[in-house]
Image 1 (cartoon, rainbow, N blue to C red):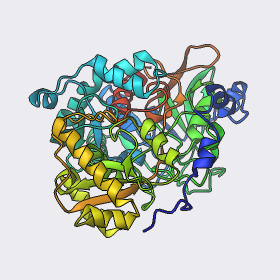
Image 2 (image 1 turned 30 degrees about the vertical axis):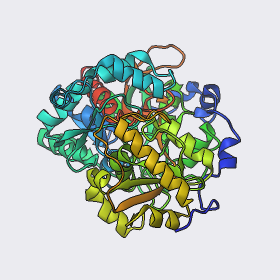
Image 3 (image 1 turned 45 degrees about the vertical axis):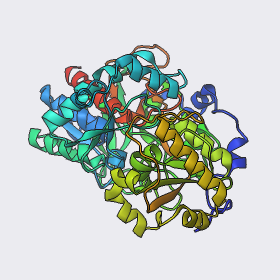
Length: 510
């Protein structure tokens, strides 16, 4: 492996030719791709519905399944529609970390946390653009969502906490398998137990509006990629409500570049290929208000040496970032707080113009040891007997790297990082126990903070009337506002579950 600036990734020059983020107004102007809200009623109500339900949920991730469960518990007849041939979407492939404020695990471990502290962290990462009421709801109800997952659904959590970037204290609760499937699988099982119908390979072509109320959907059954314009359609009626929980659009290169022209096809994504914008555009077409679409998060723990999300984020998030250091291979020196929020770290890596190297020793590697074997086999992580061997492999100036490691170890011994202010509250040890492990990191498009505007009852807000659109609800990454400019790591799961549960309950009562 070589540290080659010409490797296939977004170049520093291309990325930095636009400073800051694209403006919110440009995101709004391009969001609907020229579709007027006046066209909201162009899909006529069918003379006959093929299937009739009380609540139709679009998407089978954290938000959609949470909504389906609560709608069913509220007495509704529910169906979940999933575009892909497998369930779960991005929820199944994420790292399984859930930010929770005030849990019994935090209390047992003596962690002092509060709603205001979690909110401060969210606002700092979000550059103050977070919708305050929604953000507060996520913080306040995160423990309720955690206990619902653990005690009602049977999600299995570790009895330890992780300290993720941007958080002031350890508050990330992780599934025992360190995967989002640790949530999704119990949710699917609960849906099956309750009698919630789930169908895969369903493409949502249109929302159907009657007298300004969303009453159903036009869908393409047995969907295959490239068949978006199929005329083989069905019409599903929703007597009470439709819940849109179809996720974000980080894998939709065309659409994401209308929001941020820097994020072209040369930039990889952590998302599965179905994370595209058609459902968001449909919400906009029927009058939903798109907010903050140009804020697209890049994951600073992604490796260019594996495709998609991969396993490197687990190595980075649980081991290398909290217990090790990240250096610029040209200088051998640290250049950012390894536990800063995602935007700060991603921007810092990109500014160097090439992948960074993250290093951790045998002791610090332990929280990620279950994935390290696979990462070594895949040549994503490499193992070295000495720091000198590591420096030679990555072509890092050895003297500078050795001095950096010594300086960092002194910081750990003194429990204070005067260079970058990295929190050292996870029992970090001096990085001195061989062997040493390292990997390259370069950001990938990860999370779309913007989406459709909702209120505190998960109702979609009309862009012109500023009133909820009757019969239409949304939750999860397809919504915007909660996270502002940058989502704080592991806050996605409580966001999806808190508002997913609300959406399901409200739709069943609509």
